[in-house]
Length: 311
Image (tube, rainbow, N blue to C red):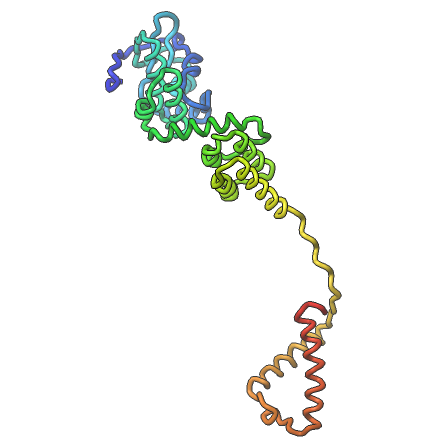
């Protein structure tokens, strides 16, 4: 608080004088409510003898009860762990400027929250400062420790969401995909058509990025719509049920036949590996060779069909 130049006093405040609901309404979290598990964890820790937690920060308005700038979870945990305590030590601030009363609690929450603030929450709050209080992107980003580009990317993503909100299931499109779609926002017809194809066929991940890239690579609406049509045909072809292969007649050999076939085939292979001429096979007699030739032709014909899957 000192770094922000905000004067404050340490006071013992009556718990009944704190407007907890007002604190929740002003909390900077997207959740919009307390994290019950975190409240319980802190309450258990507060019951320890050596427990030490930062004091909550309270705003004393011109009229009415005090409300928390920061410490909604700590206050809830304190009430749970110490139900008989009626007073609590707190930093009390008496700002009167309504703009500062609106801006600073968000920033302080982001800085000191025990739960930590997600990147998404910081971006949401920074953009809120820009829209509600005309803060520049540089100023808002600095307040929450963000890169300025992140704010512009978030704005483009929000614009895309708004354009495609009427497309069924568009709320299911991943944030990373929405960001990739941003360049298509220049033509809402193409943007909505792209979102429709993604949602209609449940295209996600790498396929979604490829589709968007292919559409962006074309310069005219006609070309882009044609590209989407090409993708639809590809997806429909991919999703079309495949024809079942025709059943072929199979021959079930008994174990004895199978064993004999494999044994003789293996033996023949070993013989031919060494005896690769008629002389080495000792079949120079014309009568012997006639028998070999006749049987080999039959074996060759049948095995060719077997190997081709005909039999």
